[in-house]
Image (cartoon, rainbow, N blue to C red; front, side, top):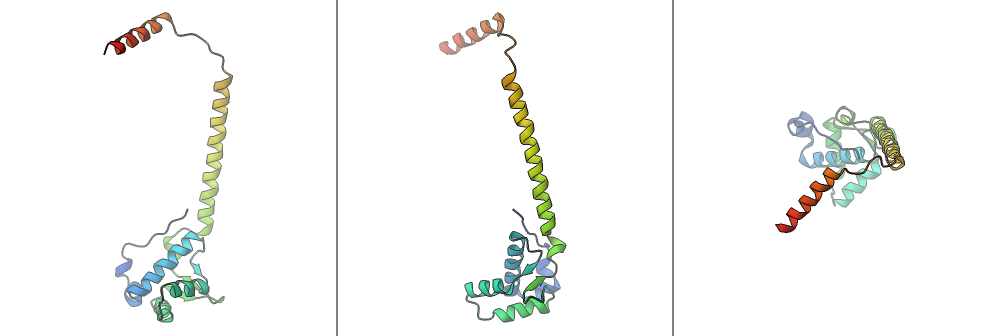
Length: 148
């Protein structure tokens, strides 16, 4: 699962100060959604409307306008929004999918190696029995434990 990150100086950035705390909350929500859905920073307008409706925020249009004014977001041609710094701080869809493919291939390779190792272990005949000296030590250890 992808994760998202923010610059630890975001709260002191010009964009955050211009947008304000409420708008930055919407920005955080959108950033997390973009990371989870591999959207490369693109948010459909319908999602923004849904989030604002869930919050019962009657000032939603104002929050979006503040994010655009603060140059954190911009409108897209398809009536959605693009988070301007998303790909500067987060992995793209292509990067996440490449990581997943690489890890999946490594897991398959490891699984094949383990399967071959197990197959070889099962097909190996028992080469020797424990020697008498080892048996004697085991019996002595067993006797000692009974007496404790």
